[in-house]
Image 1 (tube, rainbow, N blue to C red):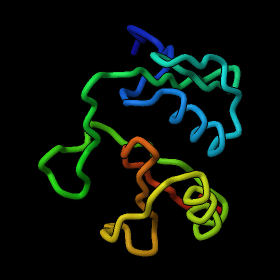
Image 2 (cartoon, rainbow, N blue to C red):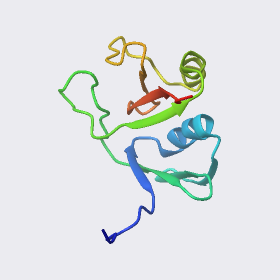
Image 3 (cartoon, helix red, strand yellow):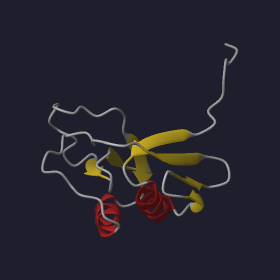
Length: 122
């Protein structure tokens, strides 16, 4: 099949772009390539994630559905327990509800976006 497009980057809505860029800089180790009150970005030189300020931003109320999640990131990690602790040290929270059991962990980033830490297949 012929591609119609290629992914340029991912942009996430939030209330505080700088804080979210700092968080994902810590998670991925990517460079913060842009940081202003209205917009920030991290990149590894090939892939970029941008964070745009939205007035009145309301994070997903996961796992409740009163404000449903709009997306989530799945991230591979080498050691699930160590990665959870490291993300918590960066400001992530670990919800009580964990649908993956021991297979993966759902966390919430500093803006309240859910993301999953998944063990890398050996």
